[in-house]
Image 1 (cartoon, one colour):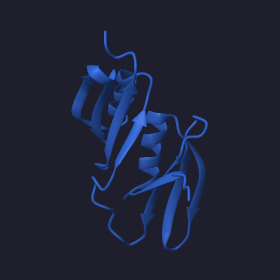
Image 2 (cartoon, helix red, strand yellow; image 1 turned 135 degrees about the horizontal axis):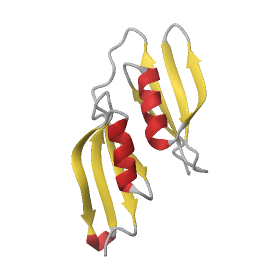
Image 3 (cartoon, one colour; image 1 turned 60 degrees about the vertical axis):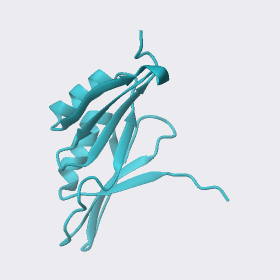
Image 4 (cartoon, one colour; image 1 turned 90 degrees about the vertical axis):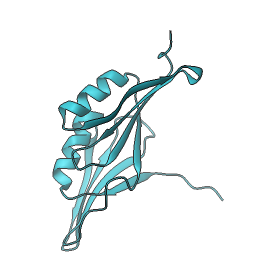
Length: 128
């Protein structure tokens, strides 16, 4: 039996602020907003074909999940620009860009404005 990972949901305090952050950093657009008396969620779609959706959700009256419940990994072709956009949008860098020469990759760790862990990853072109 096969299964595909098609979306990731993170529980947040402010769906509008978190959606704005990921739109500014990743170029996501709002695919849909669903709201009733129990919850509000915004479905964000990547401009990259075949990419999974990111959903930010708030369960009304319930506390948000503790940040660190998952790590959101975003692969980019320009890690420096990604980190700069994230910081400009309110992220905090927790691990500055590091390279792993043997794998020809670079990564950086950040926290979004609510403290959710974000990893930026660039494969290729990072070693001399």
